[in-house]
Image (cartoon, rainbow, N blue to C red; front, side, top):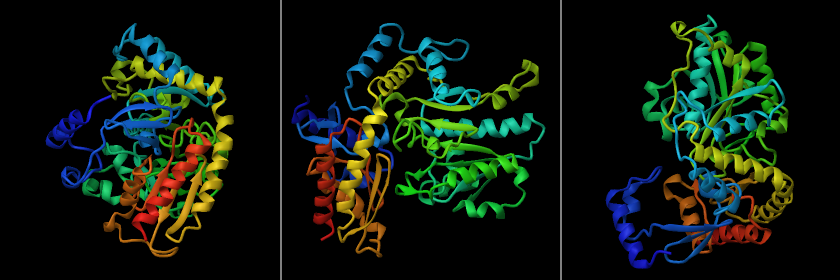
Length: 432
């Protein structure tokens, strides 16, 4: 445990030299703002350098599944560390990566998603899917298929390709001139108005729920409709399950809830149990085989990362899958999803709560001046509510004025109740 004098020195060093993501650094460096220095975790609880405890209400930015300091995940990483920490996946393989590719593909019906390409975060998982799709059509003799369809208010990451298919202007609008060719729609009802679908490479979507849009839920059956449209027009379907994968919606993958198998499935965040950077893009044998040939034919996918297939991260991911199997995680999660729904139903009656949206163990609580009127976004009410909730033992972040509640699966019923109560108190204090 760090002492408070160490905390002061760390905060000073951070303010002097760090640049935090999605953060207005003027506000961060304001002496009136107290940065958190988090030093320990156990289960659903995080502790800061001054000894205060918080429920990890957004699973450390939507990554942690089974809780912090999990003995099986720790042991798997330590065991692999005693062998080798990292070796190149270019020209060699390693046991954890090979086994993980096999295990991930085995989560789907035979002869569907049969290949796994590893990278290190959600953006790169999307990036490689987009490039695979474009190169597939080039190798297939149809280079005119180079456009994508994406959805308004989508978020798929911040690398160039992933940003291209994003639909939130404040994140990506400044760089739009350098984006891939993308047509954005708001709903599947707009698909029939798309001109020249024969020039489309793929459609990209976050299934069931859009995370950075404010936990925005898609209508039931929408994913099946989208799959059918893609099949009718020979267009690839790319599913971004970076947020929804590995149990967040109550099923192992969101696409299972509508019986849909995509052409590309992008995974990250919870893949390693929230321990280490790791991503995977799963695809079909049809896609894979189009890239096969002699070196001189230049069919190779020239894309990769130095830490692709990192053994430590893959060992953690294998241990996470073991936990799902041995602890029957999804079965045990079901009553917690119901408990969250019951607790949020009470919060939904609050006069400053415009709407509560829940999909599995993912929830968003949107606040406003009343049920119909949003606050001006510049007032940062959501951020202020989260700051107030922190004083009541909950650590989370908003999407504008939507408070996100997405704790680890080990969270108890009592901790869930405490989290919802902390949000209620935060709303009371900020939105009187």
